[in-house]
Image 1 (cartoon, one colour):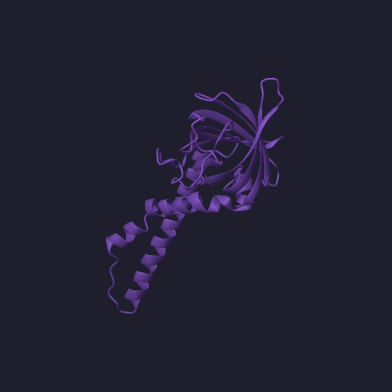
Image 2: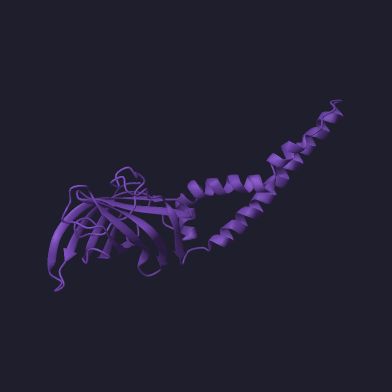
Length: 231
């Protein structure tokens, strides 16, 4: 994090000091619906849709022939509506849009955390007394199978490199991730480092409380409060 704080990911990779290009990465689902099951369900739906389309096309050809129109269905047309093609389209739509539908998201037990979050951080000293207060902006980019968490402060940027989302029936949703922090040019008293952060989100997914600790270059820890600004 910045100064003494951890940092998540963001879609804008141009502000990482130009040193590293951070991209979305896969994340683990703990307590949610198994991704393999979703794949199987989509495959079954794709097969049904493909079969229905082929049936309708062949029926239209038969109708055309009944009117004396000699029509043949080119093989390329059938290949374009094959189960594989339909599955690819269905998965793309599901990955980007469908899973975010509130009722479906609740059924899958995967929260949609995409958007911009205001972050208020507080470092803590080894004796648990308060250290430096800091502010930042977290941007979360999320699809069905990938995520990126970026924290941007006035002095540094952080990007997640691994993450997990956990459904906790008692406490709600948790986001846990490792990140890499890179100070901005001119921040000579800061050093690049790695760390870990964990957030617990409110039931309406508009606020979150979290903790972080840093290592591999900066040994600090503290708390964070998030408030959703859009998304």
